[in-house]
Image (cartoon, rainbow, N blue to C red; front, side, top):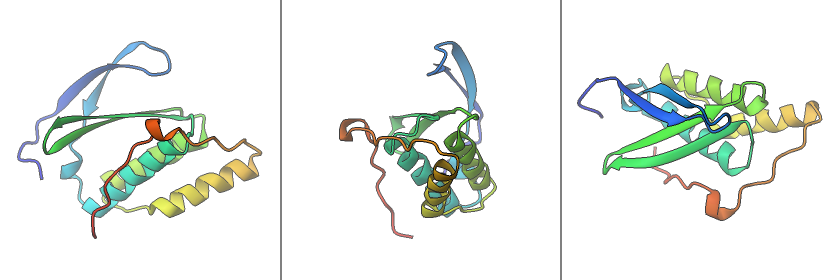
Length: 133
């Protein structure tokens, strides 16, 4: 758990428009449920790895105990709306299973006649270590 509750601002560039933007850095270790947070991050990573275009996701190591996850979503896409919901639930401490989120996303793509994405090449995929719960 983090020992500080300081708010931080990240300055970056929007991956779609290329314009600079500022966003608040949220310390997810302060969220009420580690399980919910872990499931949300796993969903985020899996959606990225599967190649869904409505999500732009990057990560970088800040130090040995902190990782900065940066996500941008396109709310006009099913994955953008789903990721927003899953992360909001996690911030409130409510877990949403990764498998269920991916199942819902696949059903939306099928029912709306959308073309499923092509998974990203292994060199672009992100691997998250599974912890025992």
